[in-house]
Structures are given as structure tokens and as C-alpha cells.
Length: 451
Image (cartoon, rainbow, N blue to C red; front, side):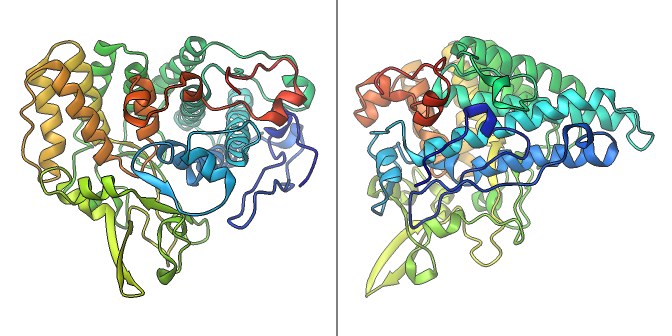
């Protein structure tokens, strides 16, 4: 194992060292990436566009494997079917500060932050006739949105984190920057989303940020902050747009050519920029490694016509040595390797609004939102009659609707239900550990309690 890991923010430099994990080992291998000199990096229309795409690429890097795994594997829908310790720790809710996936995700996320910071710092000063004001505003809005997304994810994963808001060009730039509180971290997310919404276009692009994506993420942010009226209001703006609708059948959300009308924001892959997530879900007989297996309880729920309905399409079966084996089928493009990463969907906006309305005792409207999602799946309407019953029904609906997306663990943590549902009674384990190597590199960083 390489013994030297770069300082947290040094690792997040534009073009800095990235960490890669293979399926056969847990070694950290620094891989150098070319970078332009600071005074030539973002100077004109072409480099501004390229730098913005680079931020998407860095967000794509952590959403391709690490972030979905951290969202579904600690929950009750999926188990790890292998021996690699970094995955077993997540599956068993026994993370350590030297976990490879935690270290890699944290590094990738701060690399994305730094990419956004570089765009935000350089773009306003660019005076290029090939970069009209509308496009400049769009690129700025995208950078604000992507930084907001990353800091939101950092906040729900680790709690308050260091808020780096200017480009990091050497390890000294980040030294001594202490962690903000979770409230301060979410305040920054809100500030960035507010800026993004004013700058982004009102179009229906689904794999780049637009106004609706900023509004949808803001609805999620308000849900996490238990700001019910704001969550309802922003979800309503997205639901009310003619650019988005719940698509049928359910499988249409994850069917090529992708970018369905339900998608508010997803990250696009291609055969040359591959998403290998399918490999972790498919059995060996189909060319995969079968690292992630749906748990029997999840299989039962998804296959129950009264619960899963058409969401049973998230499962598929094959025969191995004479026995039927069920596997996850959300990521299924084994030949093309172009499954997207799903970040914001309209179904979530309905369930955000349902939960926010239930919390405000708007039970009829909340039930209507819940049943809109159930109807799309071909499931009979819920008859939950009390706020408590309705909130439980919404929780259960989210479990099935987003079964293999990066949601279940974070849902149970934000609602305080991780102890009851998963048996994770030590609430210190509801946050991830700050990577050990970053603590060593910067003594001003403080570890989360319990690690």
C-alpha cells in the first residue's frame, strides 16, 4: 500500500492525484492527471466550457460507485456478497476511518468542489466574444449547482465539513480550515442553490443543471432541514412544470436512451466513458461479479403486486447450477455500459411534498401525492388515515421506489429511524468517519465522535 496520501485539499486540486479502487484489492494507488498551468487553465470560451464539463466528470466519479454504495449498502435492501473488507464494513455499519471507499469518496467530492471553485473564480473575468452573457451565466449557475450538490452530500454523509469556497492551488491553501457545523454547511448549500437558480436556464435539459434541478435539490435540502413549507413549495414548482411527468411503465426511467421525462437530473455515461455498476449486480453467469445482492425482504416487497407493482422490474432472475438466482436490474447495460447515475427524479419530488404536507397535517394532499407515485407503479392507493400512518407509508414507499439508489440509509438517518429499522443504536455511527489520512495531514480537522 502506498504510504503517502496527499493532504485533503491538496488532493482536491484541479488535476490532482485521484484514488482508484479495483474489485480485487483495497490498495490506494495515486494516479497522476495532467493539468494546465494556473494562468492558462480557464481563459476563454473553450476552456470555460471544458472546465465546467470537468466538474460534471468529478461529480460523476463519486456517483458512479462510491456514493450509491454508501446510500444503499448500510440499509435493508442490499447485502454485500463478497469478502472485501471495505464493503463489509459498510454493509455491517462498522466503518473505520481508513475505509477505502470512504477515503475515495471524500477525495473525489473535494476534487469536484475545487473544480467548481476554479470555474467560479475564473469565469467572471473572461471577456470572449464567443462566450455570450447568457452562456456565461449558465456555466456559473452549473458550477454553483454542482458545488451545492457536493456539499449537500458531504453534509448528509459526514455532518458539518470544511467549506472550501476558493480554488486550492497548494496544500497550504487548505491548512487549518476547520469543520463548519452541519447548519453552516447546509446554509452554504442554500446560498449556492439560490445563486444557481437565478443564473440557470428554464429548459428541460436533464443531464446538465437547469432551474428545475436547483429547485428539486432545494426541496430535498429543506426536507432534510425539516423546513416543511419550503420543501413543499419547491417540490411543487418542479411538479407543476410541464417539462416533467411520472413515466410508465416504471422501467421507462432506466431504459435507453434514458433522460426520460421523469428525470430532473441524471449523470450520463457512454461506452467510452463507462458506468461499470452493472458488473457489481450481475451474477457471474452473466459476466458480473454479483457483489451486491437484493436481500430476501426487498425481493419480497418488490415482487409483491400490492407493494412493488411494476417496480418488480428492478429485479431479474437467471438459473445457476439448476437454481434460480435473483439479482438487481436497475443497472443493466452490460454491453453498452451507459447506465446513468440517477440523482433527482420527479417521483422523489412527489414523496418530498407528501412528507412535508403530512408534517403540516395536510393529510388529504399528502395522501394524494403518495398515491400518485403508487398509481404509476400500478399499486392500489394507500388508505393511511393518520399523520403517523401516512409518514410510515411514505417511508416504505421510498424504500421500494428508490430500492437501489442512494437513498435508504440517508432516509433512515434523517428521520431518526436507523436504530428502530436497522438496529444501529449508536447514533455516532449515523455519520461516516473523516478519513484517517486527512486527519493526520491536517491536525485542525476533528474526527466524528465514535471513531
